[in-house]
Structure formats: C-alpha cells, structure tokens
Amino acid sequence: MRGLIRLAIATGVVLGGTGALSLHYWPIGEDAPAYFPKGDAVRGAYLARASGCVSCHTNFEEDGLALAGGAPLDTPFGTFTPPNITPHPDAGIGSWTIQDFAVAVRQGISPDGKPYYPVFTYSFYANFTDQEIADLWEAFRDVPAVAQAAEEHDVGFPFSFRGGLKLWRARYLEAPVDDALMGMSDSWNRGRQLVEGPTHCAACHTGRNLAGGLKASEAFAGNDDLPGDNSAPSILAPDLAANGWTIANLSYALKLGILPSGDAFGGSMAEVVTNGTSFLTDADRTAIATYLLDSDGTGALPAQVAQDAPAAGTVDHSNMDMSPSN
Image (cartoon, rainbow, N blue to C red; front, top):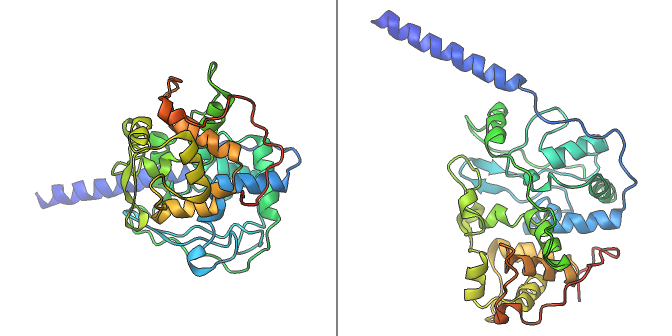
C-alpha cells in the first residue's frame, strides 16, 4: 500500500512538473509589425490620460514622478505595483523597441516573452491601431527618464508561476467589441470605442470570478471587491437613469467630479476623474455619457436622460492635448 501511495505521489509530481514545463514553453502572442507610422506625442499623451496610463503608473499618493511607478494594488492574488515606464534604459522601458511596446500594450506580453498579470488592463487595448501605438510610444519617450525602478510584485505561489497565466489568457482574454454600429450617432460610437477600449470602465464596474476573470453576465453591474477595499457601483443604463444621471450631468461629473446631488466622487473614481477624464475634450466626455446611458444601442433615451444632449455629428479629435478642460 505504501508503495502505491509513493507511486501515486511520484506520478503526480512528474505530471505536475511536465505540465508546468509545457506551460513554460507554450508560445503566446504574435509578432508586431516591422514598421510603425510616425507618432505624435500630443495625441499619445491624450490617449495615455484616457487609458489610465498616467493615473496607474504614477504614485500620486507619494507625489511620485510621472510614469515612474504607481501605488501598490492589494488584490486577493497578491500586491501588484505598476512599473516604471519612463524611458530610462534600466529602471524603465528605455531599452525597448516600439515592437516590444506594441506587444506589451496590445497583447500583454513582456519583451522576454512572459505574460503580464491581468491587473494590467491590456485586453482593453487590443484594438489600438498602429498609429495609436506610435503616438503612445512618442509620448512615453517624451517624459523625463527616472532611474529608480518600482517595487517588485508581491505574489505568492501558485500565482507567482507566470506560466499559469497562459491558461488564464486562453480562457478569459478577449479583445473589446468597440466597432461602430450603423444607425447610431457618431457620439454614441465614439463613446463605445472609449468605454469598451481605452477607458476600460468594465475593469472596475464589472465583478470578477475566483480566477480574476470578468463576469460577462454582470458587465457594468458594479463591483464591491476592488483593490484597497474600494467598490464601484452599477453603471448599467437603467441604474444610471434611476439615480438621476443625464448625458449633461454625467459628462460634467467626468470633468469636475461633481455628482448631481452636489457631492463629489470619492475613492478610485475621484482619481479617474482627476488624472484621466478631466483631461478629455468635452466631446469625448459627452460621448462616454451618451454610450453609458444607452449602452444596448436602442437609441431610445428617456427625455430626462437625454436632456441637453448635443446633436449627432462627427467629433473632431484633431486638437487633443494634455491640458485640463476649463
């Protein structure tokens, strides 16, 4: 009997080791294009604000330098510290190529081929165009290099085994559905592109399962288990309307953080506004509000929700900059 037990244990160890080795060598990702268009740092800075790069990779709690590493995020899987992404060759990403950068942002894979933890919201950036990647690249190369590397993640076994993330990717990694829909306004379609992609609203406002995957059936329905004991309410259109949100006051809240009641956003949403959406154009904030209040695309907004909504039309994004709106 003892021999059988030992054989079973040994067999389990061998199979486990073989599986781990297989995961380690399981190839993931695709090569980036050999050439990218010329980037524009101003457009890239705007996209960095919209995508949360600045707010995540800057430790505002300690007056940290821009993109030099963010505040630690405590999660059920461990503590993750957003890394330094300034152009420093050692502490940051200064030794990367634009191809390395493209694969990291759109596919969540490091230059040495390791998968990033999904606390990095790369899945929402999967549809970034080559031009957008080039713009971001120029923006990040334009900030001062910072020599101090961010702290390492504090993640215990089994989550420390990066190969296991390949199984997570196979199960949960999906590109956002943000293509334009015929029959909807330009503002609604722009809002869909922003919400489902760069601003990644679902990352906070959607619950996650035990494996850390987003619950598709609960999209935008809220999340009470965010890092740092934060929570995010439902932003489903009916719930927003029931709570008095309109296109006008929601776009205003994304600009200044003021709720319809006169109160202000708190917690992580206050940071999103201060370091992200307050830098967007009025047109983009209106687009986000337009989409969220009609995310199923019925086009049938109640009168109180649609109040002061702008007429449909093409949104001009040619003069994007980093300056907060006034």
